[in-house]
Image (tube, rainbow, N blue to C red; front, side, top):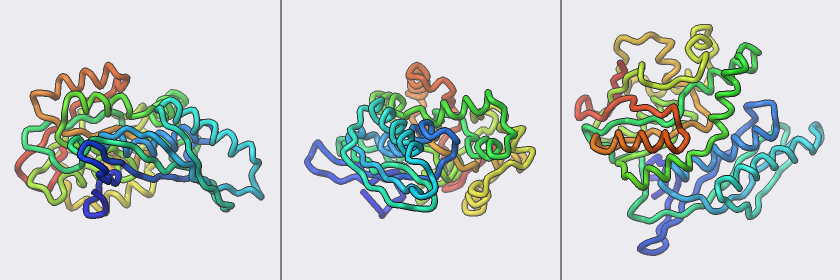
Amino acid sequence: MGLERADDAGVYKLTDDLAIVQTVDFFTPIVDDPYTFGQIAVANALSDVYAMGGKPLTAMNIVCFPSKTMDISVLTEILRGGLDKMREAGVVLVGGHSVDDPELKYGLSVTGTVHPNRVLTKGGARPGDQLILTKPIGTGIINTAVKGRMAGEPAIETVVQSMTALNKASSEVILQVGVNACTDITGFGLLGHACEMIEDSGVGFKIRSVSVPLFPETLELARMGLIPGGTYRNKEFRSKMVEATGIGDVMLDILFDAQTSGGLLISVGPDKAGLLLAQIKEGGATDAAIIGEVVSHPMQRIVVE
């Protein structure tokens, strides 16, 4: 399972009951504190393995660092934050690679395991399934506001707490209950990743915008025009697959907002949805919500109400 479909990670079958899951992710800082940045980068990289139903086991650091213009103590704190988050996830750091680069970047290459028959993919959603989102959205908008010193402390604290939170507990619940499809919400935004789930499929999604959990201040900041460039690119790329009825441009921008270390978007049978949601909330994802359903018509389109 690799490049033939845009899934969250690659999967290679070793035996009848064992496969490895591999992914890589790194990016530039989105917060000022180096330790926190390290934690966010690691949580984000591990998320792709969780979205595939896997258990991350080992990781290698990827570091780009401007050694001539930045004190090495900054890198020390980034790596310390990352290592602490790996320990929380039960992941072993086995190595890494660094290069001198004018722009700071950090992330991980991750290897995990999964049973070949229990791999979760973006495909597989069935008509009647309920759609569950495990974390609020709006990180791109709030992080943009932070750069302009326009976001309030409560919103900043809530977003940082969410971005550093692992999707581990939610993934474990998903495997216990059983679901039909799953992906994590990152750079393409909620609607962008939802489009990936219905692409080349026989189903569509209906999403209730009022049910989508948002971070504090997201709506107000979006109305002020604090929209990151990646959100507009997401909207331009996928807008032909989306029918927005009765919602304004601001809400549509939020639903396309480019996320960092976001939650999981899950397609689950209606008979299991209530149990799954309750257990995900018990696992710590208290903002998780049912945001819509899978429909047979219109196919390969998302109707947002």
